[in-house]
Structure formats: C-alpha cells, structure tokens
Length: 88
Image (cartoon, rainbow, N blue to C red; front, top):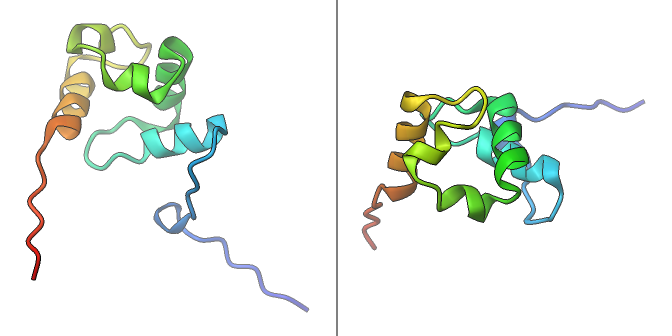
C-alpha cells in the first residue's frame, strides 16, 4: 500500500523548463496580482513568452483578454518592486 499526498500549489517543485504549463503556473502564482491560470494562459498566448510579456507597457497588458487596468497595474508594480535583502 502507498499513500499519496498532493502538495499544495506553493509547494510544487518548479523547474526552469520550456514547458508551457510551467510558465503558466509561474505567471499565475505571482503574489497579490490576481492573474490566475486563465489570465496567465491568455497572456502567454498573446505575447508568446514570459520575456515578451515582462517588457510590455501597461497599455499593452490591458489588451490581454481578462486583464484590465488594475491587473496590468499590479503586474507592472510587482515586476518593478525593488527588494531589500539584508545580509545578516
């Protein structure tokens, strides 16, 4: 007998592969942005890669089906937020 435990989304092992599902999962899991699976998939369908998506203006992001001004603004803020990590 064996016991299978499905890890939660946050515990999923992520590898940097070219697999579309991994890219959709990564994008959909950005914290406090509210993208979700469907919006992430729509974004990658429209812009073809994460890099192409990351360099878009807010005006371009609004054109993604399911995205609006608020999601586009939160996404851009997430990408441009500077992180301060103190070495202790």
